[in-house]
Image 1 (cartoon, rainbow, N blue to C red):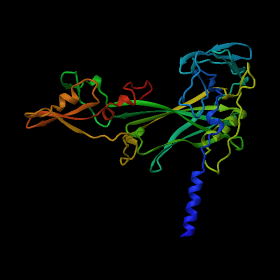
Image 2 (cartoon, rainbow, N blue to C red):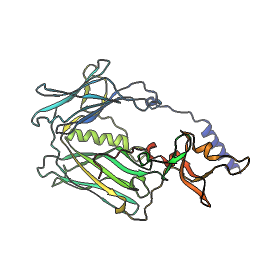
Image 3 (tube, rainbow, N blue to C red):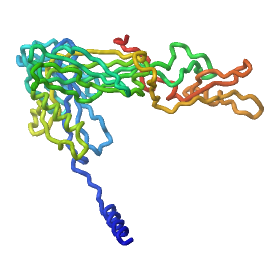
Image 4 (cartoon, rainbow, N blue to C red):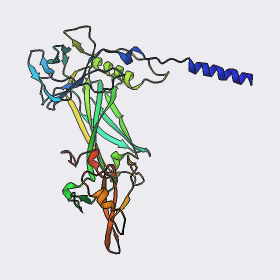
Length: 385
């Protein structure tokens, strides 16, 4: 018993003597420029996103840089301005750059700080051979294959944007006009929606150590069989970028620092520098690497009819149908008038309830289970098929 008591005392003292440790990074006040994007040398638009870092203790997670002057400049001093589109995004239509020249990005912020990326040659990205998927049993795994027959491009990066069609848990065929329950017009349907998401995973590959410049079925992403993305139709657009060796090393270090830390067996955090510098304050760190390249794209669609019939999506809410009735006797409560008829109600009628041929009420559910526009849009994307 004494041994048990002694161990218990040690545990108690160990817990009692702990002091919270807030590392300097938590409360650091420095805010540094973050530059994201690629100078697209081809006919597609160039997108550059500017933001500032925030401390880990800050309640603000997004800190966009607004009203900056962002310009692509060639080694012959030809300039191509980008237009601000809000939320720190700066855009230019297809630049169609001369692939024999070099280019850099110039940034001037509202506080007159100036930033500049290194001159970079144009990287010609080879086409994507294919984007496909396998079904190992618990979902789908999407992969990509590509190659460079010229042997010039040895470093690759990919990102992707997912779009999927989904529907609400129930189809509401009734609505309210504020006075009574009426049939829902087809133009006001809130059952089928579309939504998109751009994923920030860093996907890289190199053929520098291979005899042939072939990348075969590199994993892009995977989707669980219970994902709502697969309930109707899913599409993924994969973008492929050619990189220089320096750009590739930057992305490898960034991936290590952001995605592969957390256990005692992982690599320790390391510092890494990009190719962007503050010219008005050379000691100020700047995060990002601006490459110049053409971009290759490939999109595929996966319909639910192509998947196993045993796969069922898990709806993100716990949805149930309730019965709300008209008053049918003395002293009763007219639940329809109270919960369904007022405009803006969080409870929506689904279908009618009849008894002996007479309408006695409506099945209903919550707005989260009936209105898909809370998580998507009714507008079908132009590329959808």
